[in-house]
Amino acid sequence: MSSVEIVIEPRTRDLGGFTVGRVLPYAKRRMVGPFIFFDEMGPATFAPGKGIDVRPHPHIGLATVTYLFDGEIRHRDSLGYDQVIRPGDVNWMTAGRGIAHSERTDDARRQSGQKLHGIQSWVALPEGDAECAPSFHHHPKETLPVIERGGASMRLIAGEAFDETSPVKTHSPIFYLGVEAEAGADIPLPDYEERAAYVVSGGVSIDGEEYGAGKMAVFAPDGAPAIKTTKPSRLMLLGGAPLGKRLIWWNLVASSQARIDQGKKEWKASADAGFKDSAFSLPPNETEFIPLPEE
Image: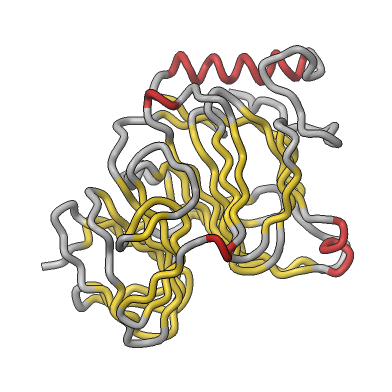
């Protein structure tokens, strides 16, 4: 009997000239543990002079995590952080009561062009931390534990797994692993209530059934899946303890509609005030921003 509860395939979304594959949230499965949003960015090739320009926008009630396989992205936020992220590094931004940030291609990379490929996900915050002070932390790949198991090399992006702990500060029980493995590797899963595996490239067999790239298998809580790579593969393993129902609207996450509505009003009021003495401010050296979408 299969341990897989549901299989999710990405839906294509255009973020202004840059295409992503959206896996979470999904109509029949909104979250996996605290993970409420999961996008595969690319793979895409930018010609010289081209790049991504995600203008400043707000977040509340979540933490964002960017993890790249190829390319670079420059992060700027309203706390003043200005950080280029490269493959294997982790940018973990806790929005809490509110933060604004931009994501762009750095000037040097824009001149030369680049390949860009990675995963961007959001982790909902538990009730007690949803209004915490915003923060940002960059973790170079050399600081993240690498676990060798069953022929697979697994980088622990966040949380705890297999007796290792990531240096990334989290707010609830979670695991997030970037996996690279040759064909025939046995892929273990840590013991958490909610778990999923996303195939970035290659393919796996789960309980004897084949799954190719672009598939997220969400496992039953009591499942004991037998996962084996059928070709050289890259996977993301993720999950943790469930947090309960969350609402998501645009870039805002909360447990109540009232808090979502408050976040909308705060972003619009901040924009109307030129981001002076308001709930949100713009990152340094940024003058553009994404307006509140029409309802």
